[in-house]
Image (tube, rainbow, N blue to C red):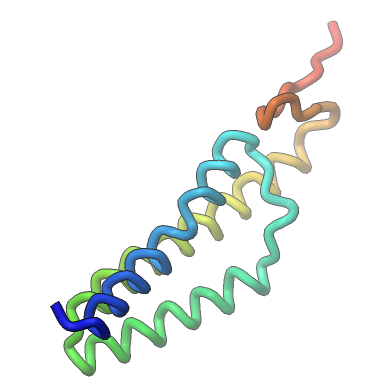
Length: 106
């Protein structure tokens, strides 16, 4: 395999899967306040633009990578929206070992 082709596959892999740790953390803590909507929408625009380029040039590694990346970005935007609304409805809670614990008074 040519060196530059290998670099392209490697970059596509890491760009596509770099969102997994953040998605996992967000799902575990049910908290996404520190994630910026600006960052997410700029990432979405970049992902869609890269997908258009990849489809035009017919580079399969870029097509697959940008599709996966765009799906993960959309998922992260959804989680931010979901948990931001959840945070508004929960009055008392705390985070222990990366997990949210709700304090309920009887």
